[in-house]
Length: 406
Image 1 (cartoon, rainbow, N blue to C red):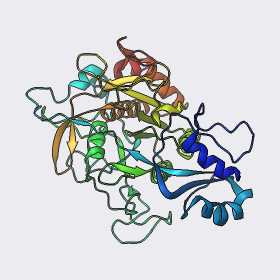
Image 2: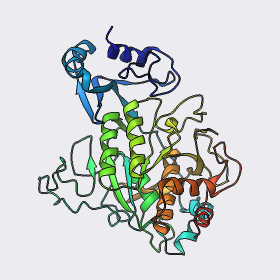
Image 3: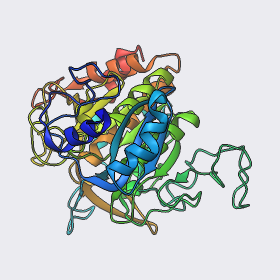
Image 4: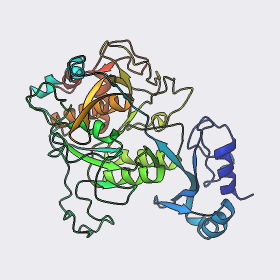
C-alpha cells in the first residue's frame, strides 16, 4: 500500500502518541497524528508540505486520484500530505442580562494591574498584533484608529499594488472570501480585538483595551458561522508574519490536529513571533483531552486559561499544569462588537487577548527583548496560586513589568 495512503488511514484509524512524530518505519513522508485528535476532515481537500517548506492546498475526487495525479508525480519533492480539517471558534458565552451597572466595564484591568504600565506611558505603541479570527469591524470607533496599514497597497483600487499576491490588503485580509474587504459578521473577532486594542476614552462605561497603542492586524479565515479551514488559518498566519506581526492571537481551537498547522506555528518562532492561544472552553484537562493548537506545546506559544473576577478558574475553562501556561480574566469581559456596540462575553477566547495585550505592553517598554524573554516575563509575573496551569497564577502587568526592569 502506498505510504501516503497509509498516512491518511492513520489519521482516521490509529491511536498514536504525539502529533507530528514520524512513523517508526522511518519513511520521511509517513507522519502520524495524535490518537485523541478526532479530525473532522474536509472531503476532497488536502494540505501538502513540500521539502522546500512550501505548503499547498490540493483538491482531489478521492484518495486514489490524489495518489495517482498528485503524489506520484511529485513524490521526490513532497515532505507529507494530510487531510485539510475544520477549525471552529469556541462559542463564547454571551452574558445576556449583564450590564455595566451589574459588572464593572473594566474589572479585568484592576486584577491585571494594567494601569501600572499605562501610568508609565506604555500602551503597546507600534507593536503589530495580528488577530487571526473572524475579522473585525474596522469602522468601530474604538478600533478604527488602531489598525496596521499596508503602506504598499492603495485601498479599494482592485490592484495588487505591492505584488504580494493579494488585492487591496490595506487593513488586513479575509482568507475565506479571498478579499481585502475586512468585516466581521460573527462578532467574535471584533470582541477579541477590542480586548487588545480598544481606544481609551473618558467614558468609564466603555471598555479599555489592554494595549491601546498597538497596530491591530485583523485577519479572517472563518465562515460567518465560526468555522474555517485549517489551510486558510495557515495562510493567515504566514501573512501575519509577512506583515511584521510580533504577536498572533489565536482565540480558537478544537480536537483537530494538523501537522501542517503545527509546523507553521513553529516556523513563526524563527521570526520571533509569540503565538498566544486560548486553552478552550470544555472544562477539561488538555493533557488527557487535547485541544489544538493549545496542545502543540511549542516554545513560542503561550496558552491561556480563563479566570473570574473572584480570582478563581472559570468553570468552563480548559486547564493543564503542563501545557496551559497562565490564567487571565475571561468571564464577564466587556468589549466591542460590530455596529458600534458592546457586549459581555465569557470564554478563554476573551482570556487570550488579555495576554496578547500584555505582551505588547512589555515589548513597547523593551523593544530589544526576545520573544522568549517576553514569554518568560509574563510567566514570572503572575499572582495567586488558585489555577491549574503551569505557573499556578493569573497574569499581572505590574509584576511582569518589574521582571523586565520597568
